[in-house]
Image 1 (cartoon, helix red, strand yellow):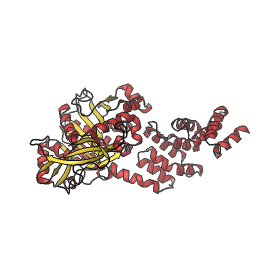
Image 2 (cartoon, one colour; image 1 turned 30 degrees about the horizontal axis):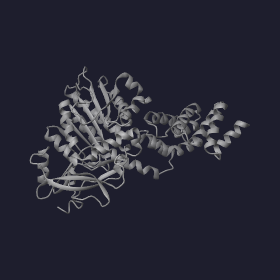
Image 3 (cartoon, rainbow, N blue to C red; image 1 turned 90 degrees about the vertical axis):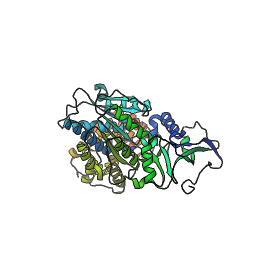
Amino acid sequence: MSDIIPMRGLPLVDHHIHEQARPLSESALWSLNERFFQQAGPEAWKRVPDYITTNPWNARIQADLVFGFLQDLAAEGKLDGDRPVTVIELASGTGRFAWHLHRMLAERLRDSRLADTQVRLVLTDLVDSNLQVARNHEHFAAAFDAGNVTAVAWDMKSDAPPVPIDGPLVLLANYLLDGVPQGAWVVADGLHELLMGIATPEGVDPDDPLLLDHISVHWDVRPAAHAPLHQPLLAYYTDHVEGAFTVPVTGLDLLERVRGWSPDSMVVVADKGVHHLQDVARQALPRIAHHGSISMSVNLHAMAWWQTHLGGHALSSWHEGQGLDTMVLVNGVDPICTRRAYRRWEDLDAATWSTMRRMLPHQGPFTPRQALALLRFTGHEPLTLGLVADSLVTAIEEGAVAPTSVAAALERVSEATYVTGHQDVDFDLGRLWAALGSHHRAVRHFSRSTTTSPGHASAWARLAACHHQLGEPDQARKAVLRALTLDPAHEGALAIRVRLDA
């Protein structure tokens, strides 16, 4: 077995043993991961990758899946006007994905025969300070006030749901299962359980919030227990796999609990992982990715196998996603419409969209038609606006684009923008509204930009220019003073000061 476990038994030299080898599912690795998120709060998302799942494209896909499930429920007479459908997002973070899902699902319901269906959206997270961002966000204010959206601090390992369930249930798990307990086994002359030990370099503070950046792991094995949990699945893998593989034990347990909470339910899992049997065993140990927190590829094949073992339906793609796979697990109904929605997006899923999205910075400058098409294609998400803003400003100044087309696109960008305190989308919005001659709107966005990025001299200079255009010299002088304090040689600010002094 040495070819499978090359680091067996001992940690690296000059490392302190943080934890002796024990089953991966019981490792302190997972509690350290929780500790990182609890200590970091909303600041975690400056390091932890999340955009591939929180963007409007992924929300569009999952809104279609939820709507398809509602259609299936309606077709089988399982929508009751007195009992709401509960949609729970696990690990919501600061609510960016939930906001996109909320508005897109509302659009689909409004334009359908299901317009009167009661749907309540529940954001959950282990860290309440993350949810507080959503509770206080201007986009969500009306929905929270109306009771259509709520946010509950909740541990997904709890036996009880975050809110009482009295009707159909949808659970959405985006980039979640890769960071919660998994088990690991190896098939070599029978089934063995993989054990993992944790070590840290000498001198590293065990209470360091970024401890996970410093850990190394070592592995060992032991014969599998006589009657381990998830025995049917492990027996199947023993017969069909050679080498090491993981099992998302937290995810499998969640599937069972969901069936107890509601017999008519759907779980959507979007995570990095594999869902084909031939890819489950790669003759290698689990690989841990470090990004402040840690994550590990998810065996989605096991999720599908366990779901069908429990008597439900599992929808998975014919191809592997690059960094993100979406799987749909349905109970209680024949998922005809859900399957149709899934197949509609199968070839242009969130992973494919993300790959194409990363190609865009290498394609500019853009014609006005290209710029507006890219905004529509990406759901008017703000990062795309940053790529095409220069091209659109030039087109506006040259009269090469209809101002009404740009204004309509900017309205959609504002709707799709969910700022949580460390993005500066407003600077580009301000530039474009100013180019269109809408200086009142530009002032609003530049003011927000100076709040988000108070050291951005150009934002202060452009704010001053807009106040000057609006005949507000006092505000203009205050803004230009801030710009020149930050950058005494800023050409735009100097030019505005000359005009103010004229």
